[in-house]
Each structure stands twice: as structure tokens, then as C-alpha cells.
Image (tube, rainbow, N blue to C red; front, top):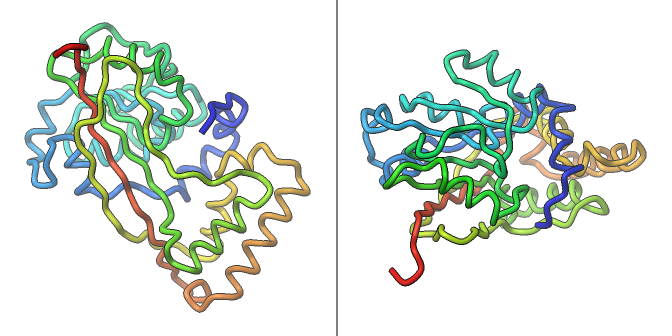
Length: 255
């Protein structure tokens, strides 16, 4: 996905909606990101200084805090960080970007990036990650996708994307000095409602940057999908997700 600063900067306009309607991340996969194992102890997380980069309103930050990690949250949007700070006042928040991280050299053990690496310049961001990581530190990436192998979810995704955005699978591209060393996939479901699905659509950058007529057309398409499937006519809707997570570690050419 090509970096687009206009789209990337759009989320602050609906920070509250993002926090209310975007899904969280499965706890076992977050444990794996922290400790390299889904069975990693929460005590081990307590020894880690974590930078949650592109933290937004704290969808991943909240999981890291649950696991007792000491977290600093960095994001370019003050509006998003304001929501995070209201919910988690114990977390230090700093306005900054992946290309200019406002932390000292060798200051964190783990850098996490949830649903945001596609917005960064991978070469500049990788240099900054390597700068702030302590020896033995790692980069952890996590990404939620709706499970479009299920027919009604595929129809929902088509209604959301049509004419506004080309949906593509995410696979991280890293800059020099980092390499992917492990990957984990987890399938799970998020509980929502009809209104929740409509509100979820309004948190997407391609909705936030679209013209009013395109926004209305998108929501009308989604309404038709929701009317057409028994799974989406229930009072509570189970929205299936696939979460992919990667560990990246520093490496030196020739080693």
C-alpha cells in the first residue's frame, strides 16, 4: 500500500469513533509478540519497556498494559492520543512519527506497531526503530483483517471498498537492518451490532477522506448487505477476523 499522508492524517477527525468501533487484538497473540510464545508469562512483560508506535487511541496499548508492560505511546495525532490518555492515564503519550521517534537511543526493549506500518516510510522507520531499540530488542507488528473467506464478510468488505479503496492483503516491508524472523496467525470474532458495523465503516481513512456523496453511497451499500444475510440481522453480530503478527529482529549484513 502506497503511503498517503492525507489518508494517514484523517483518523483524528473521528478519534472517538475509532476507539469505540475498531476491534482490539487477541490477547494470546499479544502475549506471543511480547514473549515469543503464546504461553509467555505476564511477569515477563513487566520487565519490558515498550514503545507502541502509531498507537492511535490505544487499541493495542490497552492489551500491553493488561500484560503489565511499561508502555510509551507515540502517534502523529494529538486527538487520537487524547483519547488514549483519558482511558490510560498511566501511559506516557508523545506526539511523533515512525520516521522521527521522540525517544532517546537504546531506550526500549520492544517496539510494537498495530495496523500502522503500511503508513510509514519503511527505510526511515526501520532506522528509527533500530536507533531506539536496546541490544536484543525486537520490532513486533500486528494486523487485523476481516475474514473475507466468509461470504457475508466478503460482501461487507466489497460494499465498504467499492470505488473508494482497493483492498489489499498486508505483508510488512522492512528497511535495511531488520528481518522478519517469526509469524503467527489467529482467527477470532469480535462482537458488534448492525449500528456498530456502520460506525466501523466511518472510521476508515477512505471514508473520512471521501466526498459526502461517496460516503452516503458506501453506507447505503452496507445497509443492503446487512439486510441480505441472516448473520447480520441478529441483534448481536459476530464479525470474524484474522490477526497476523510478525516479529522482526536486527541483523547485520554478512552475519
